[in-house]
Image (tube, rainbow, N blue to C red; front, side):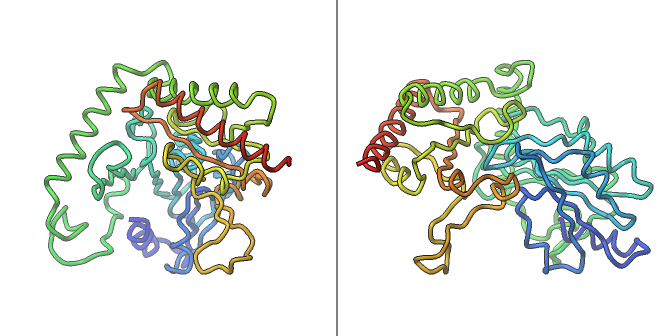
Length: 325
């Protein structure tokens, strides 16, 4: 999609160079060097948000596509999509706006019409649909510019060839129906999943209380405008590479693809790799290495959240004690 749309717009543009503006915390580096279009990154705040003003200031006469995540998968930070769309619409030429809402669908209200975007990406497994199914919502502005990158049979109006996986498509539809039903009955004024946000707060409060004054827990990302289920934290003095193996059998969490002591192909003594997300928000290296991502879900209980936080806190306290000896 991101390749096919610029291809058409590129032909229509007078300039032979197009700028694909992207939020740096959207990892889409495959576009760089894999297509004839230039890319321009718009820097984000330390909260992980990119401002509409920064996007507007970066628009060039030959900008043809803006793509930004609706929410970030590591921090959970929500982006001001409607404001970014408004900034793009103020340009004197056509700019297609795409957002990847894979992390957001089913967790917060995503009104495509209200956002005003031209293209929206959905990943089914993020809202309890089968893995391997997704969807692309195409608006009227983008439809004439959408070109296939695969060719063959005429399925899906000639955009994507191949026999449709009907069973998985039905599964995605049912998952969306259930998510909509849940959000209509279990959300607050913010339009978010209150069950997940309650359990996230319960996990954090339990973890902080059990750790006491032994260390500090820092919440990363935006304090308010974030997904209800995502908690990205750094526990001072407790490396995630040490903590996670100790709790892996009992608590399912991760470093959020944030830091890896030995990236693929790297030497054993290579420097730690820090994710593009954490680099974009200028997080200190020490804090990066202490970063952990925890997610709550529809089937998690209060007892699960409390027990998981206690297990993590006890392991962290043990590590701190070992390091002090």
